[in-house]
Image (cartoon, rainbow, N blue to C red):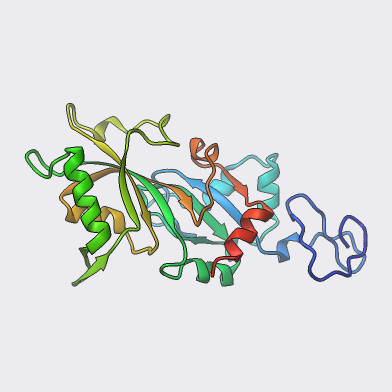
Length: 256
C-alpha cells in the first residue's frame, strides 16, 4: 500500500523519504527494502570506509552523529547501513560531494571508466621555490597539452596514462569560497591558483599524483559535481547530506 491505498502499478515511482509504504495491509514500513541515494558533503579528515582505520573517522559516522530529531537521519536509519557504500571515493584529505547508495547495479555502472564525469576544484602551488611556473599563460599551455596528449603518473610499479576531460584556471572557487584553508598548509607569500578539473576515470589519488607529476603541490581538493549532480548549498555545509530527488535518480539511471 502507498498512502494507505493499494497499488497495482508495478512501475509507479515514489519518494521513500516522503511516502509511507506498507506490505500486506500491515502498517509496517518497508522503506528499508528500497534503494537509497544520498548526496553527502564529505569534510576533510574523514575516510570513505565502513571500517575506519588509524583513528580517522569514517563518512558513515556522519549519519550516526546527527541528532535523532533530524528527519533525514530517521530516513537513513531505516536503511540497513551495512548495505550502503560510497560510489566514487575521496581520500582522507579531500572533500566534497559523495554518492552513498545501496544500489549495487547503479554503482557498478557509474564507476565504469568513461561513464561519469566528476568535477573538482583544486588549489595548487609550486612544490618548491623556483619550481614550475604559476604564470597563467604557462599553466594554460600545460593544461591544454595534458588534456590533449595525456600525462603519465606512477601507479604502483608502473606508469599509467591519464587524460582529464578539461583543466582550466578559475579566479576563485565557485562554491567553496567561504571555507578557510588551514593556516599551517599555506606559507606566507606563496602564490596559489585554483584549477577546475573534470575527470571520467577514478584512479586512486589521481589528481594529487597528476599535479605532482607536473611539479605542483595540491593544497586543497574539492569535488563539486558527480555525474552532473551538484548542490551549491550543500557544498557550504561540510558533513551534511540529503536524499537525491527522483529527477536526479532518473538522471543517474539514464547514464549508459
